[in-house]
Each structure stands twice: as structure tokens, then as C-alpha cells.
Length: 260
Image (cartoon, helix red, strand yellow):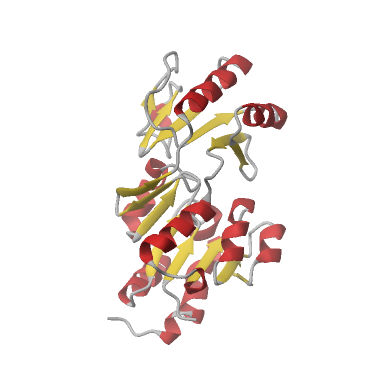
């Protein structure tokens, strides 16, 4: 099957552990684009948290915010949001559990945060301060809160009929629209581009990448991925710190293409 799209997660997959992207990886991705292969990132990060990497690698499309948003070179082409009333209720439920709970809310490319230390954040220094005393009037794509007990997150998600997403090695929990996720965004993008899932090669490392690796034509796990991800992948490449994504692409895809 001809490869028309490379779809890759960022953290612990395309990015090295220090958060960098090697020159080798950037060169390989550019070579793919020169061969007419689309480069798409699919990340849980907010758009502003992924922006520096978007600028570095210039992907053709960006699936961000846990699959609730798709941008084409910074222009929004898809959005999946919570019902506004439900979104505001989730925020209030979180604050009732602990008034000091740190909460971030994505509304398109804008992110709100009730932290006094926004400027110190590497990922979210462009967020806007909001204490959530007044209900938000913006479309809410994703709400993330730091919680000490996963049971609280489950209770709030069940009460408000939303999807709950946890993250590897973190005590942050995301509250998302029921019909959201990387898979839904990928399916939407294939419709827009009129390409098949079989023409996509995907790369990932964490539980929320599993379905992505399963539905695409070829699913590749980096060697540092969790075991469940490696178990469902078609193959396993080198680790993120060994530029596993770029190494696999060069050895298994670029050998069959001529650059323009």
C-alpha cells in the first residue's frame, strides 16, 4: 500500500526525552513532504503547547488538544466541543472539590488557566489567566485538572457524561466531549483529504495512541512505549531518544520514493 500520510504523536515518540527534535528527524520529515507524503502530528497537547514544534517541523496538519481540534498550518478546520453548560459545570465541580485545584481550559487555540505562574510554564506561557468566577462563554474543547485521587475524576466525568482521559505518569485528568479523541479526528481528516486509513503509517507510545496504531494501515510503537502499545503495534522501532520514528521512515518508506 502506498503511504500518503505519516501520523505521529509528539511526547515520548517524535520528541526526545529532553523535549527536542533532532535535525535528523526534521530532515527525514521534510524529505517525506518532498515526496508528497503528508506529515501530521496527533498530540494531547494544547495547540499553544505544541506551537514550538509546529514551527520547527511545519506539519501539513495538526491534531491537538486530545483530538478535539485540527488545524491546517494554524487555521482551524475541525473542532469538537463540550456542551457549554456541561463544560462550566465540570469547572465548578472541580473547584468545589478543591478551590485551589489548577484547571486549564482549551477554547480553540486559546487556553485559560487559574495559575499565577503562567509565565513560568514552558508549555503554556501563552495561556490567559482566569479564576473561573464567571462562566465561560467560549466553545470548550477540553478541561484539564490536577487531582490527587482518580476516583474524583471518574465521579465528575460520570456526573457530566463526558469522556475522561488520564496521562502516563501524571496526576492530571482531561474532561473531553464524548465523541472526541485522536481516532475521531483522524477519521475526520481522512474524509477531508479523501485518503484511506490503509494509506497511513502511525507512531505512538502511550495508551491513548493504541487505537490510532490499530486502525491505521501500519502502526509503529517506539521501543520506550508502554507494553500494551507495543503489543498492538504492527512493529516496534527504536526509542524516541534514538530517533525511532525517523529511522523507521527512512528504512521502510523513503527507500521507495524519489524526492521532488
